[in-house]
Amino acid sequence: MSESPTTLPVVAFLGAGSMAGAIIAGLTRPGVEVEGIRTTNRSAEAAAAYAGRDGITAYATDEDADANRSAVAGAKLVVVAVKPAMVPDLLREIAGSLDEGAVVVSVAAGVTLDTFESILPAHVSVVRSMPNTPALVGRGVTGVAGGSRTGEEDLALAVALFETVGEVIVLPESQIDALSAISGSGPAYVFFLIEQLTATAVNLGFTPEQAALMVQGTFRGASELLAATGEEPAELRRRVTSPKGTTERAIAVFETAGFGQTFDSATAAAIARAAELAAGK
Image (tube, rainbow, N blue to C red; front, side, top):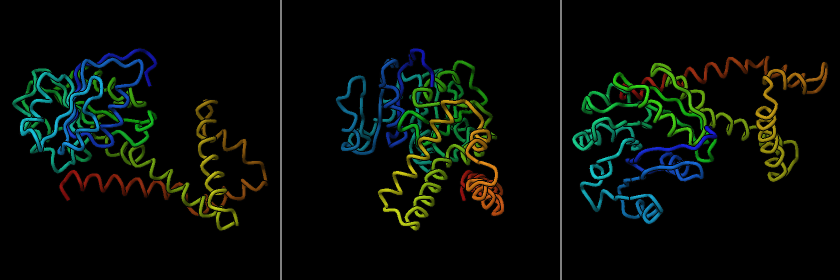
């Protein structure tokens, strides 16, 4: 995450769900200056979560049929955060209201840059992104890919937007699905491992509370150790794995079970499913 002050133009969020909410939280942190934030939600109840907050204008589409068009008018950054199936109709709705030079940023999984560019006018650039859920705590990893008419300044704006909630990787769109299989789905893999190790601890006689403390503390501590030392994971693993010791025996079981190949197969399955979703399957 960037340590220098960040200044951003007016940002409009179409669909203010959990991911949009995470980015909005990043925009309202100290050290970030935004000319204005606009949000649209379907219901007045959802819009009320943002209404009245300093610097945020909230719209409800149920109450105002022009809410999305009003939100994007004059906005330099427009974040499309609705469900993928809703994207084409939404783009057609706002196409005529987007300012020349606006940058439309997609967080809709599986919707290609070509889909956006085929609907939006030529004076608008498009950036496709894939953030992950740790953005909710400012520790996200987001991949961004620019479209055919996206300039360096446009892409830099999108990068600055997502740097408010974590780290950013710029890559070609062809790698977005692969990134999604690693950093997008990755938190679920970590949580799955935590679930499994916690269940094992309970099976060994620890209470659920003791198991949670041991496992979650171990994962948190190991991650912080990795970040603090700057060492390679393999080196830190080696330091824990004494020759002919207990950890070495456990690692051998993982290797015999094809742990590495399992991860390869799992990510390949995720990438294949992403391609199916992009094809509308």
